[in-house]
Image (cartoon, rainbow, N blue to C red; front, side):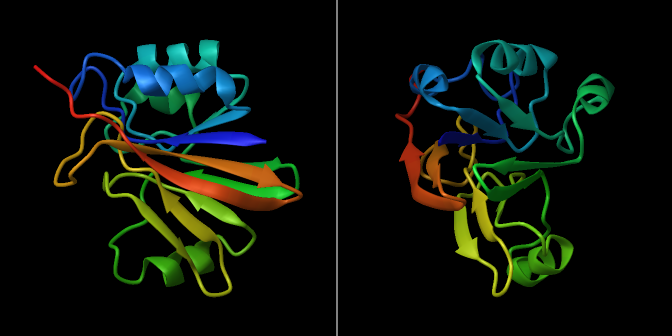
Length: 168
């Protein structure tokens, strides 16, 4: 099972549209995971219409329309893998401990908010993945997203993808 992990798209504030490379990957993914801060409902509608399966949550920049359609925390079982999605996990310091305490029943937790790619495993807790942002690199050198495979209840082949810089 192929996963496409994104977060913090912030459309149309940070970009006018999702990057072409990301759009080309949508039909290749069995599951698209979005960890919040969509900002507009058009992006949710687009991903719902083009994804085989979409798992998403709302973020701190998402208004009432998105909050009415998306949960704060999402959970799913994917081929035996216990996946969770949340937008915010707090400061980087102590993140693994906090997430292990809050989500002891998960194998993987996808989160966003910081726009900073992250891949660690909490001792006795879930693997923590932040795909960064495909549209707003903030202080990062590149806009990013992640792909991963799920096989037999395990997450395999996690890859961080750098997007080319946009030209004005």
